Amino acid sequence: MMRLPWRVLAPHTAPVRRASSVPAGLMNFVPACSTTDAHSLELLQDFVTRARRLFVMTGAGLSTESGIPDYRSEGVGLYARTDRRPMQYAEFVRSAKSRQRYWARNFVGWPQFSSHWPNSAHKALQRWEERGKLHWLVTQNVDALHSKAGQKRLTELHGCAHRVTCLGCGAISAREELQRRFISLNPEWQAQAGTVAPDGDVFLEDEQVLHFRVPSCDDCGGILKPEVTFFGDSVNKATVQFVHERLAESDAVLVMGSSLQVYSGYRFLLAARDREMPVAILNIGPTRADHLAELKVSGRCGEVLSVIQLL
Image (cartoon, rainbow, N blue to C red):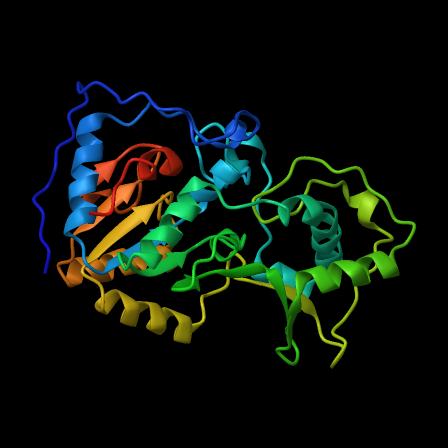
């Protein structure tokens, strides 16, 4: 088992000057962060080099660099910018009006949300997999950017917004197919898009969605829902067990771009602690698991991974 002593980062170390990994137009969703100092990069390089079967967990902080906002980032996350909160599972299931509002907003936001592409951090992790460094990647994101980057050893813990499931019969279909059905059912419906949200929809007023028509399942007439874990719902038990098994096969854990505030991801850090596995965290701002980490590095994922070498 690889073990590393606790590393105290030296704040006085001169930062390494590098070009930003985030295009200028996408910076508004990335929290303010100073350039990661050279000492921190050396410690993370050492951590990655020692690992032989690395278990990586990613969160929304990875996708903000692709232009997708998150919920919790200081100053720029959804919670900081608005008083809006994400759809709750119970509300979606019990209320046809809530489903109409959700799908109308999602319909407007889908062309933009589905057009995002992997950034340099996604591509770096895919290369780590190809080189045999990365044993398994678990993402809490539902944006499919890891899949778009070519990641194969991947579990989408909270599902994927590019898929739709029927709550009646369980049939799975492509979100793009549902978009075509929306267009067919609502040929004259229009709405002015507002600010995009992390789950892919936009802000619309209630009166804008009154006449929006939502299709049912083609097979059974059941309720259609994105194949994602809504707030208030729980992750499939088989998925949780599968991830625990992949964790048990690994020898180190690296968390990237996640505050780990949601238990569905945090539980695997608790399991890593119980297994006495070394943990490193790369994130802007504090996380729920900082006390479990042997190494904590502050920085943008794309910028930091650009200088980590696989030796």
